[in-house]
Length: 79
Image (tube, rainbow, N blue to C red; front, side, top):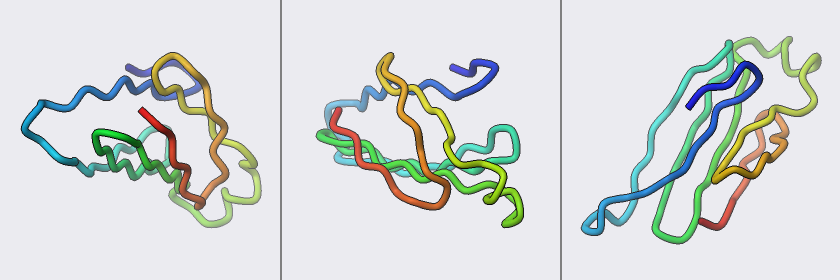
């Protein structure tokens, strides 16, 4: 789901899957996402390096809880 200021994720993997990795581009930010049965790893990277200076935190909602991501740093969230 997409909101005006963030993407929202509620990961539910099929029982036979062990993991999945994918990318989403939203508002000039690439989100790199990896999901296993126990955790979600997410990294946010703005398209332009210069925009890293302007953005200090990038909000993302996972299972109705908002997390603030630091551009370029991976965040691990239990699911």
